Length: 596
Image (tube, rainbow, N blue to C red; front, side, top):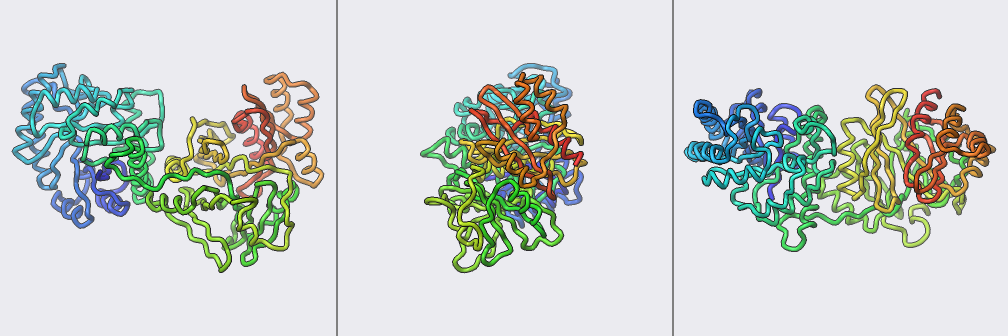
């Protein structure tokens, strides 16, 4: 199927939007009428520019408030429509979107609406134009796609068909399976948008909170599968109204949008299975574990001190690079001082283990994910890398056959064996700006198949922190993504390490001189009240600055180091089937860090 995008999805002028859509790989665009009206290009110039860029002009939209009106208003509506058809002829666009009436309808009759659309069809046909009638979720009378389809059938005109919009259908909880009962030749256009699960009026939801496929709660894979099964062969087009995308970089948003459509087509093709006409890309390789965590700085000595105090083992210096390795159990932390002038300690990259790194690289190329090259010398292992939206470098490596990854052998003059203080990396908290957050969710979902459970919000001294965990199905990889308050600069990221006896780890770390993040006495008073813990247990937690949480599955103990640069470490112990992250303790940690 052809891939298209509505210009309303992007920021900038119509020219900039067209350039960005073409560069991202789209086949065509929907021309949003206000973009044309406010621009300086004539319709003929827009048409010529599209031809030069290799873009088709697939739809002109929107035409509002046409049907269900009295005869006097119908005459004026036909006048408005004829003026639009003339502009479409100049543009070279052959399909117009007509939305169900919201403001001026006074007649709730399918027969009247069909008769009026038939009249519009006669006028449209005289200009060589088709009309795609769409049910808006907030239409005055017509707010259901199936009713809109019945009106189109009743109109029975070759120039009258329907437009199916996933948001208008799924936001109202309608069953999209009836699409398979439609005549595919009368489905003139399809618009796609995802959205978060929100409880609000549908108009505001639509105007401000739509998302690209893969970022929200809608099952768009199943939706598009219905279209494939019925034989729809027209464009799949993105129509996403979102306050963030209207302010972000035009080209980057277009690339982000294109990635979502490639991902969605692949998802739908796999739902349909054999016989699908949609394109697939290499199958997702879900990460099986974390290969390493990379910290970068001009001087990593303070981080090294923390790692030694925590109980990790120095494994050596890389034989050709200014890079050092510390490890414990399956935890491997790489400290990189290359090309880091004036840089404070920052989480710069993560390595992930997958079954087939080459397949992941091929999937990334199909999704248009930007690669990250790394210079290697003879005899050094080559890893495949990609840039996450925040700039984090993500490298993938095939699962080790046995023991440690082969690249560990490139480090010399350190201990041959890791310590046993820690088991693995439990989770890595990453930080994004508000403009990067939705793109980041799509990146981790589409490229690596991570899942996104319901998000949360955590109170900090500077405002609410929005948090969304991305995780593999088995929990081997957990990446909480945080959006810091708008006025907060250098919001920290952190790495959490698992252990079996956190009291012993904390006591040993304190003996080695590790400075702990100080937890106030008020927290422990509140803890005793909330959970009814014995006094000796509370005293033990207080003595080691440990935090505590509990749910139906088990308990969670954890402590934090102070920040070093834009980074800190957390040590955790999961007891039983506890599967959270101590979210109720996050405000305590944030306040303590603010005091530091």
